[in-house]
Image (cartoon, rainbow, N blue to C red; front, top):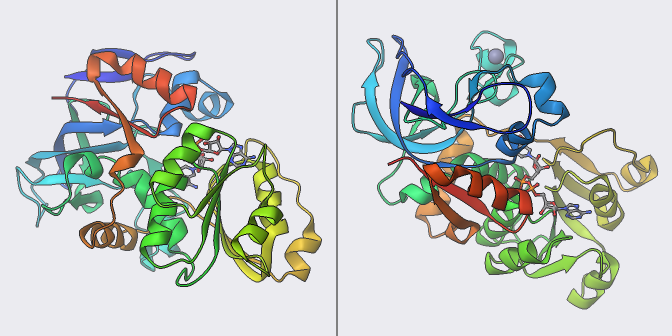
Length: 341
Ligand code: NAD
Ligand code: ZN
């Protein structure tokens, strides 16, 4: 089969022939239709410090996908050949305390598809049956291919009650703009989105942000005044990985505000603890998606009319994967889709 493989340490990625993965007794073999490029894939492509520590080449990368079931293992029930599926790329151990308590997103032994085991950028991939998510007929393939990052957005945005609240989202990357759309959908009052990239702020506006803010030119206290906000933001969703953005968030929260923290800063993060303490803020770290509560919520909000498709800005045939990585690296993109059929 064809696959996108990190063949050796160093920048780059190769399209090459690889053996088809073997479907175990509890596994499902999936024929890939569409995949999407994640920031993680770009890190691996660039061979940054994190990748150098984490990735053991040769490895088929990728974890955002939709496809059809081509084979099911002998022990698998409830999934059949031909089902249209995506799946959870965090494979959990099943025996740690959190797994046994049904909190698989907090597993201590998580293994990542396309990071620690062969991934989805291939004509076929194998997943444990318990990680497979069947796609409702009303969700099209394009959107089904980005349920993984939409799940990051949903897990973060739905961590706190947003109804009638004023929400600050720092970072208008694909995940930030999908979170903005979802926050509006579930009834937030103002959804203010910051970034330093005007292309991405344009995307946030199209997806429903009340006000977009290029933080190089405008300040959040001014925007609060413009909107008639008197006390600060009720909920903050950190989706930039920028220390500066996180500190701006702390400064602009109301007392008792709640922050869900998804963005991954490069190094260490210095904050003013007085803001945290005297404002009585709650900060929740977010990793991945809740299995499978987030997936059901995603399916339901999509079925109840939320449209996240504007976040998909580019499509490429597999052979043009380099163009896909280039446009991702430029920052002037939302989600980039690669077609395998
Ligand atoms: P992205 O890198 O595409 O988007 C981040 C955005 O933040 C960019 O548009 C960038 O211009 C913007 N930004 C940079 N500096 C800023 C500043 N000072 N103020 C406001 N915005 C600023 O990433 P993404 O794919 O949308 O993911 C968002 C973040 O979440 C990333 O940090 C990513 O690493 C992280 N992430 C975490 C998880 C998890 O499970 N915790 C999963 C996926 C992604
Ligand atoms: Zn576990």
